[in-house]
Length: 423
Length: 117
Image (cartoon, rainbow over all chains, first blue to last red; front, side, top):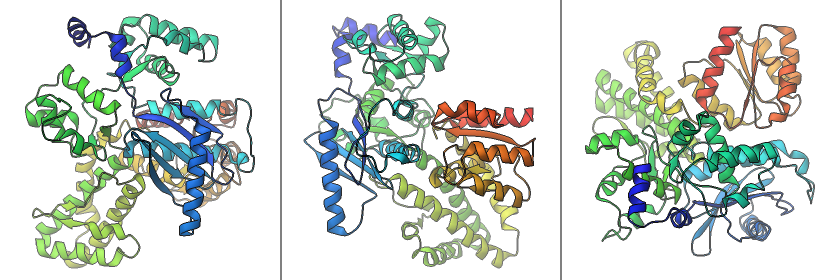
C-alpha cells in the first residue's frame, strides 16, 4: 500500500486531507429501554454532533406510536433521518437497538441484533431502572467494539491518523493501554496496512489489530477496510442505483465497475477477479475498501454465509433427485414440500428450480438476517420432506447414499468461508 | 452440547459446529437444563460449550455440578463478560472464549482441549 501512498503523494494529495475524507458508514449506535425511553448506552463512530439522548427520544416516540397504531411492537424497522442517514432499529424483549448509518446494510443490522441480545442478557437488572451512573458499560463497550471492528479491521486494512489523533488517545483509559496504542500509531506511517504495522513493529497481527481497533473506536485512527480474497461481498440496498448510474457519476475505474457488476453474494473476491481475468492489485482493493467504508458494499452477514452451504446442499440434492427419478418428478417433490410447509414457513413459497434443477429463491437487498434464518430453516425442512419422498420412490438409503456425499462436497466448497466468521 | 439462553446463538453455533465436522448431541438454555440433558443424553457429549449468564442456573454452577458427574468432561466457556473468566476456570472450565469469537478460534480450542483431555 505504500506504493499507492507514494503515488498519491506525488499527485499532491495530503494524507491528513485524505484522512478527512475517509468516511465510516456507521454514525452512532445506542440502546434504549423500550419502556422508559432511557438510553443507557451509546457510541459515536464519528463525531457527528448528534445527541444520542435526543435520537433515542425520537425512536422511543416512533416505537410507541407504531405500537399504538398496529397493536404490537415491531421487531425490526428503520426510518430515514435527515438527508444522509438511516436509523436501523432492532427490537429485543425490553430494549431497542438503534444504529444510524449512511447506508443500510444487512451486515450492520446483523451486528446490531447481536449487541441488543447481549445487552439484554447482560443488563437485565436495568430493565426497571430509569437512570444509570458510572462505568457499568465498560465491558459491554469493549464487546460492541469487537463486534463492529473484528472483521472491519482485517490484515489488509489501511490505517490513517487524523491530525488530532494524540488528543483522542487521552480518552483511551488505562495508562498502559494509552502507551501501547500511542506507540503503535507513532511508529506507523499513514496508509500502512495492519500487516505492515505488525511486521515493521515486530508485534503480532492480533496485537496490531487490537491497538488499531482501540484507536479507531476512540476516533484516533481512521481505517479503510480492505477485503480479503476470501470475502464474499454484495451491494447494499440502493447502491446499484447510485454506482451504476449512467455516465458513471462517481468516476469508478473500469475494472472496479466490471467487478461490481459481478457481485452476487456468492462468489469470493478472488473468484470474481479470476473470472474477469483481473489481477488482484492494490488500487482496485483500495477502491473497494472505500466503497465498503462508505457502506456501498458490504460483506455478506454470517446468516448469509451459513445459508450458502444449505443452498448448495439442497441444489445438489435436487439435481441428484432429477438424475434418479427425472426432473419433473424432482420438481413435484419440491412443490409437495412447499405445499406442506408454506403455512408454517411462508418463505418456502419463493423456492423454485432452474432448468438445471438447482434451487433458486429471491434475495432482496433488504432481506434481513432473520429472513435469511427463515430461509435456512425452510431449506432444512424441504430437504427432510424430499428425502422421505425419494426414499419411498427408490427404496434407497437417501441419507447415506445421496445426502452424505453431497454434504461433504458442499462442506469442502463452502466450509472455508465459515472457518473464520465472527460469532 | 451447547448451553446458552440465546436461541439464535445456539442455532448458529450448531450449524457452524456441524459444518466443521462436529456432532451436536444436545442443547440447553440454562444450567439446570444442561445437567438434565447431559444425564439423559446417549451418547454423552465430550465437550460442553457453556455460556455464563443464564436464568435458573448460571454456567459456573452448572459446570461444578457437571464436573462432579464426570470429572473428565471438557467445558469451554463462551461469554462477552471476561470479568467472569477466573470464576469460570475455577469452576472447572478448561478454556474461556470472549465474545465475539472467531469460528477458527473455537475450532482451535476444541481441538486442543479434546486432545488434552
